[in-house]
Amino acid sequence: MRGALAALLGLERDLEIVAQAKDGDEALEFVRTHRPNVLVTDIEMPGRSGLHVAAAIRDEKLGTRVVIVTTFARGGYLRRALDAGVAGYLLKDAPAAQLAEGIRRVAAGGRAIDPQLALESWSEPDPLTERERSVLRLAGDGLSAASIGERLALGEGTVRNYLSEAIGKLGAGNRVEAARIARERGWL
Image (tube, rainbow, N blue to C red; front, side, top):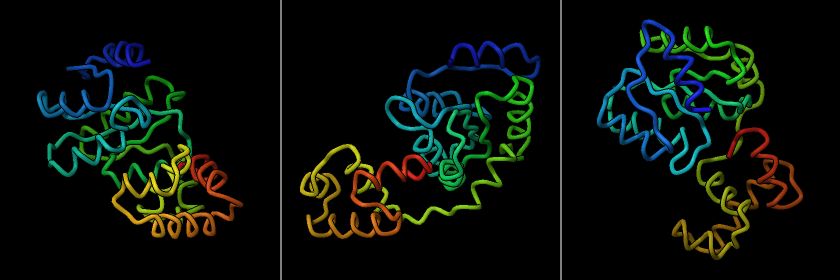
């Protein structure tokens, strides 16, 4: 997909592809090295996620603006992307001309957000705290409360409390169901 998108965008006279990365870690290194005006990335990829790359770019004040191009048409992902400093959030099934126009808008200092997704993102706010999200993500991966506590430097009882809060907020029957609900809504 990366190569096809780069080829399509490369056909645009005013857009130049300066690098392509195989994963999030390499993308961040390329941004540090090449300092592009815009980074086009996905949310899910090997290594760092696109959201983590965007947050690192923001935190390091690298000046590169980030556009997420993804299949994740969920309001929760959009909200998390905006929190990470993303300036554009477009869907992969959008026409190439629309993607190119969104990148141009972001390069010029504006935003490019899929309008339908923007409406959806405000209709159902994410009830989870960042810590509940971290704990729930690991629980959804099958880790025990003790293992989660070790990874996050938390006591096992504290982990159970975060899980209980997340389960209650999501109206789930257990932590596996809570993780599934949160993933479906784009909150993990």
